[in-house]
Length: 394
Image (cartoon, rainbow, N blue to C red; front, side, top):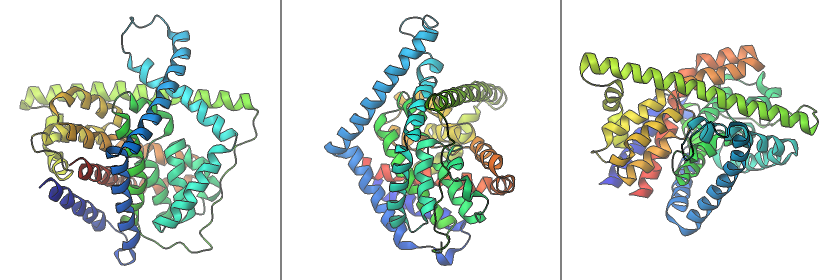
């Protein structure tokens, strides 16, 4: 029965993308089927096989080490601020972003990351039926982040047609930045974080291929990556340190505002209607949670967590998940965890449109116009990844 529900959920998700398609006649079925099969295989590999589990454990150990190194710097500056043994979200989860941002900067400076991103992007373009630029952008988004990725392709940004620009932005919203992966791993199980990142990569191509299908000619299928501005090594370090700190501060500010606002709204709704706002959203999202393969006993609470991510961000939702996780089955935790690992929320519309507008005002306005459609597609990517995981966890 659980397999049947997941398969129905898969069909419904693809149908919802089909309904929003700009040109249904040119949708390429074969690459979509291939990528779905690849998703299932990869999900099974990482969640069910000994080799996959060992890979996840190795990745988790790397990030554990990085977090320990980051803690040395944090303790030097903030040592004694928290009581011994206490967990302070800003210190333990957000500030390590600064150190990981530095590592990304070093890999960029030494040309290691650009080489990796171009290579993997070229291989993906053979599989997904899309252009080299789209494939590169998806990989770059998952590594350098949803804002920074547009800097790497700014030489082509002004010449892109709206349909290609949509695909680039959809990839940026469907993935997550490598700089905050360590932060996610402190809140949910690393195996779900890694699995979600990989599934979302292919899911972004699948949903975009349906919602926004198009052909890329040989003349258009070029990739021009912006080289890093000439800097000394220490200039680069300073820039990435500050960029990482800005991200940590911005996330902290958003969390303060969103958590406080949700608390206020919940209290007001509880006083007036006898039910919290998140509980209401839980009922709205419950059918989607059911189609994702979540057991019926968990769908209301799970729907509330899903809705929290959509209207706020993934960090707030992960915190909400931690508060109700004890009442969930292991399967529910796995499905919801994968759903949460993406930037698919309302605030990302402004972030992505602002990033593009900073490089090209006209294109930024174009992004703002299809912002809601971006969020719609990115949310379907998260649902699709969660359904694939539910098939494996069944």
